[in-house]
Image (cartoon, rainbow, N blue to C red; front, top):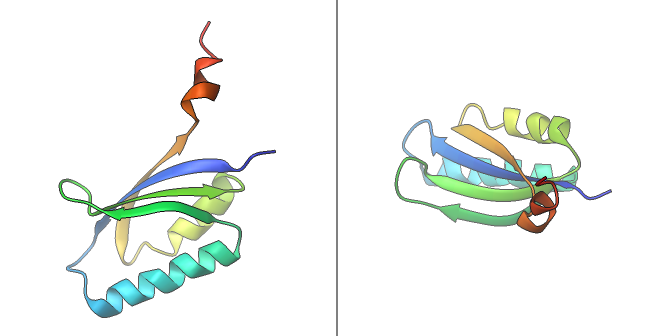
Length: 91
């Protein structure tokens, strides 16, 4: 069974500092040790400060990992399905 793909939009809760970035990096490394795979990570302009594309075993694992970031960022997370797979669902 394939892992689930997640699109994670995040906003810093306060102005990022070097220490804050280092702390969130540690949490990302911890998530990867627990089965998450980071497919892409980008800092962005606009409504969100970053976008992360990740792959993980399931929604529960993603929620467990993301809850650790609550002190640092607010997130909006979407489950994604590759377009070629989604198009097969159209009737």
